[in-house]
Length: 167
Image (cartoon, rainbow, N blue to C red; front, side):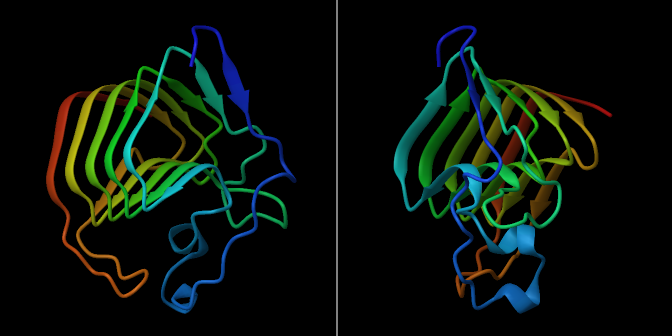
């Protein structure tokens, strides 16, 4: 993203959440990915970078209504993902929900979270460097185990370097 560029989500234009047979075991926010501003499922070697702003617009901080979303970025079963240099605001329930991601780098970010900044679930090799978070609720959640879809894995190698949180 170029300096000064802003990508803004528009309420009513998000993909519908896909059915998840495990819904009954956990909350809506951790059970769905596709009703997010940006979503990656099974991707490798992805970089989101630049000095621009990702703005969730009307993202919900709870379960969204039809056509709405509740996550700025949702990643599931991805590898080698870098998010760098951006400002994120109006992230909804989660600014970032990363589930079963290997090799996630979060670097030089400014995050204005409406609720949870980052939920890092069953991820491996995560590095957060120079990240400023202003959060409405939780700064960062790292969950050891979360059974969302038959694949349970422990998180490992989560490093925080110069990570700042301001409530």
